[in-house]
Every structure is written in structure tokens, then in C-alpha cells.
Length: 493
Image (cartoon, rainbow, N blue to C red; front, side, top):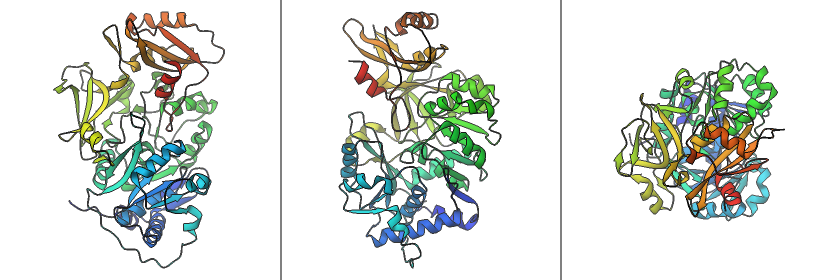
């Protein structure tokens, strides 16, 4: 298949009255027929503004219904959708814009001041294009090839410069098919998205697969635990993905104990290894909970685990999904022994095509059709995978390898610990020194020595953090992950 059909037109023809998208805060909703009409109207406006096949169209907006209409408008005319991370500094946003050179910036009025300062010639706010509704539409469909780019999602590069991950129509198609088959999605499924829609977790983990399937996507802007639970109940959501920091706030809320989550069939955690106490909180309530693993360049969905198995194998991301292949590699040698750590390599139709304007990074990441993730994992006797951490985060102390995730999970077992991150800092004698930055629960009097004794009973002595820093809170990234890089800069040097 060298071409890709117009998803939304097909879906609106088959199930026109089904609800496609809902705004969590207001309850405003569009059917598939309405979403398709909005996308067609916007496709006409884009072409009127001179957007051609292959041109980039950027969006700067909070989580909003406009993401859905612009995404599909771009697909209809062969343009490339570029959601901008509004949590970046203005200087970083300018770097992104200079890299992808959008023909047009579509922005929410709340970002008017930022939009004025970005080097894009043509700009249009949401209210402006809405005024054009009702105009006679004579837009021309530009049929994309399946390998044509549909979106560019920017991720933080290890050198500090964001990298534009190019996802083709093929990659989005295969991630959707893979997810539908492996996670058993149906048209009756409804998800709530609080992860930012400029991020693959918000856009591609569940939203695009459910739009393909005919399900419902509820888009929320500002995450608040109590509000999230209210929306899940009101909209009768069935499957929801959040990051561990969101779940942490959820289980800390008094409303969590009162809520039965009767409509939910499964909660998913991704973005970072999930603390085991979060598993326990959901299992105690009899609610299915499991962990996933993905990244912008691959899917993002790569594994499947049955919730019943997840209860026994806490921390496992499961087995490779239907159309994925996974390898563990030690250099150029495949790791086949159970419990041995290796770098995760992924192959499948859902992989990205390249990094925009960055052939060197592309060549380093893609090897004969395999994507080298830079993440470390292991496989148990039953073939189930566990994520150990980033390869670059591995600590080598006194010649021994220490994986921060393993140490973090043990520290989180202590009842006085709220949050923790572990990393290595240079040390003259040991090479690196295991360091922990910790948030204690309110009114805790736990000392570093007491916590070190607790860890020493559970892990080898070389894994026990020699340096501990107690803080009031941990810095977070745009998607709610603990910002280890910032914390290393602050406390590690």
C-alpha cells in the first residue's frame, strides 16, 4: 500500500454520530461528522493561506479541541503537523521554529504574546479562523503517500538542542493498528488525555488509535487529581494513561478512596518507571493497572501486559506488541540470557523515519531497520520485559554497575519517602558516587543514616547512596517526569 486513506472522512462516513472528542473542562463535544467538517473547513483555510503539500503547520496551544481539527486538516492536504512545546523557554521555541520553518503558525489567543515573538511570517489565532466558518469550501485533497511525513514532534536532545522526530502516515497507522489489536481497543472505549498534546503520550498513545477505531478522546488542559476523577466518572472513561507523578497525586487525594472507577477497565502508566506503591494502591481497590513503555521515535506503544499478570510481575512492561520486534543488545551481541541487562532495540512499521534536518543523529539511532533506544532493559524467565533505565544514567561506581531505577524502587518502599531520584556524580576514588535527592512525607524525621541502613538491608552496599539530599519538591519536565538533568545540575556538581 503506497497511499493512505483519509481516516477521518472514512470514520465520519461509518459512524457519523459517535462522539470523537470532548473538552474536559466544558463538556463541549464533537461527533465524528462534526470533527470532519471542522477539519475540512480548516483544510480550506490552510490552502487559502498558501499551505501546500509538505509544508509545516505549527500549533501553539494548551490542550484543546483545535489539536484534533488541525491534525486531520493537515492530513487532508498533505501538510506536516508540528505541535510546539509551550513549556520550553522562548529561546528554545525559536530554535524549533528555525529548524522546521513552518509556513503558518496556528495559535490559541492565550499565547498571543509568544506568537508575536516567533520568527514565522504567517500567523493565525483560533478565533480568527473560526470567523471563516461557513465560507464556501473548495479545498483540494492532496493524497499523501504512506511514507510522507504527517507530523514532527520535538524531543529534548541530549546536547540541549531539541530533535524533530518525523512520523509518517505509515508510522501513525501501524501504531494505531498495533495498539488496537494488542490493547483490545474498541469503539466503546473512552480515554482522558491530560498529557500534553504536543507530546507523543498525549497525541499517539491512545488518541490517534481511538480516533482510528471510532472511540472517544476527552482532552483535559490543567491536571488536578479531583477534577480528573470527576471527568472520568462524568464521561465514563474506560482506559487512561498518565505519568507516575500524576498517579502519585491521584492516590494522595482523599477522593481516590471514595471513587470506585466503575467505568474504568484499565489504568496505564508510562513516561517513567512506576513506583510499586502506586500499583498497590490500585490493586487494593481491585482496579486493573499496568505499565507501558514507549518513546516518540517508536510508536509510542511497544509492549502489552495483561493486568492480572501485572499484579504478579509489578514493574514489568510485558511482552512485545503484535507487530513489534524487541531485542536486548550488548554492543553488537544480542542478549539472550534471562535477567541480563542490555540496550533495548525496536523494529516495526511504527518507527519514525528520521530526525528533521539531522542526518547524523538519524544514522546513529537507526541500524539496519532497528531503532537503538538508549534505554536498558532485561527479560525474565517467562520472556517479560522490565525497563532498567537510560543507558546514559547507569552509574559505574568502583567498577560496579548501578541502575538508578532499582535503587529508587527500594527507597520508595520506605513509608516516609514521597519521591526520589537517583544519579551518579563524579568521584575521585570511585569514579561515580551514587546520589539520591529525596522528598520526605510531611512531618517525617527520617535521617540519611536511617534511610541508608534501610537500603543496605535490601541492596548490595555499593548500591546504597553515599550522598543524600532532602528537598521540598523535585523539578518536573513538561510532561510531568522528574527532571533528572536539572537536579544533577543543581545538586550533583
